[in-house]
Image (cartoon, rainbow, N blue to C red; front, side, top):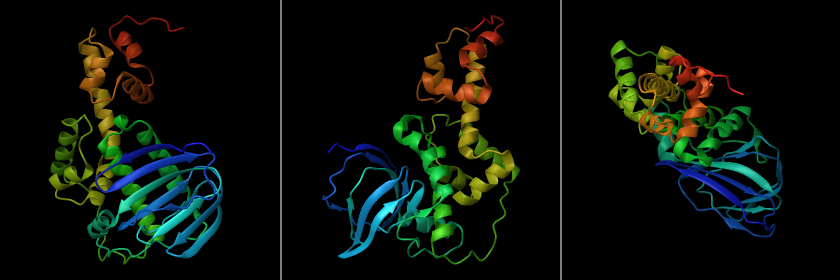
Length: 290
């Protein structure tokens, strides 16, 4: 039996853990810590054999297909056996976090998530989980706005599809005033290091997180985290053009990137060429790349 491969990321009101285990002990019973929280478990590959108990009752015995999602309540005294190899992502969200989101949207708190015992195929949560994996692998490259955007999308989808809620009494109009938009852009521009949350910007604009996120995207065509990346790249372009001798690693640091490779990846994706090639072309010393 091999040891599991574990990568994880922890926040104030959530934790995300990816566990890959090719040969688990099929007889080991794992006690899950009790908490007033919900897990969203996404299977990243086929999981042939699994057992789950709630208290003393065997709740499920069987497998899951790749892309299947389970949403257990962590206060149910969960125990499980992994009887075959598996690879999954477990996102645990506190009830407090979900209640706050419901309050922002004018809805009542959810009781439990309802889903089939063997999981349910959910392409949306599967792709959102895939988008979260790079942040677990390299936490230093994930900015706070990007994580907030993903968590909001995951939570909202899970609540809408699986939670028992009361529809909001009034519909929020996703729009920002010019002053609110200016405040949001200025905050992002002055926090290129990524240590800025959606909640902080929303508070400055006197809006809820979910309302702000929708309104900002409507106004700019981008989610807040995408706008942040654009601001970083534009700042990098300014430095590349004005300071042709500044080392690339220093530019990456000045613009809030984790390191030079992170700058290169994002810059190339958004601009269409590497920072080095772009700098040489801007300074009239373009060369042939073999």
